[in-house]
Image (cartoon, rainbow, N blue to C red):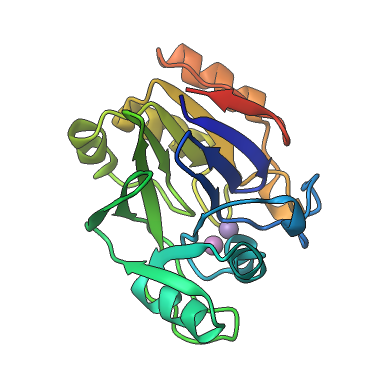
Length: 225
Ligand code: NI
Ligand code: MN
């Protein structure tokens, strides 16, 4: 059974029998993080786009663990230039890794590499392992193709930004749940900075009113699915 652990902001640890993956591991600069990059033992690091609050400590973690960074092509090349092992992908593409399948989705957002270079397009990640699918949307606004994503791939857990300003706020994140129809929706990308204050319990309550299940995962808490 895959286990998801919240590391704060949009950072998660996803573990199965086969592997451990870090997603958008923003830890050392993250005021909400309770662990540091040295505490993570992973084989893969997934990075949705080049913004600092998502690349975070990915380079350091990948090097320390000899882990492979999975990212959109242009961002993967940046990581490769920092002497990391990479597996470049792009939107719409999927690949069968030893631990399971990863598919990249669109994300309506921006991207640039940490050195200010071209970061390509941002993405979201569908990760299927042990028959269960996690959808980490990355940073994105609401988009109607979420309906198609949910139809093509039944989603067990959807991780949705609710902080507004840079991404969806709660109104749009609730609509995203209606489009994706996940078994469980977990909020992310809130309260890390002043500009993205949001009440995650309000999101969960409204998800319930819409007929779905939401859950706030406190930083450091895990959820097996
Ligand atoms: Ni961003
Ligand atoms: Mn962000």
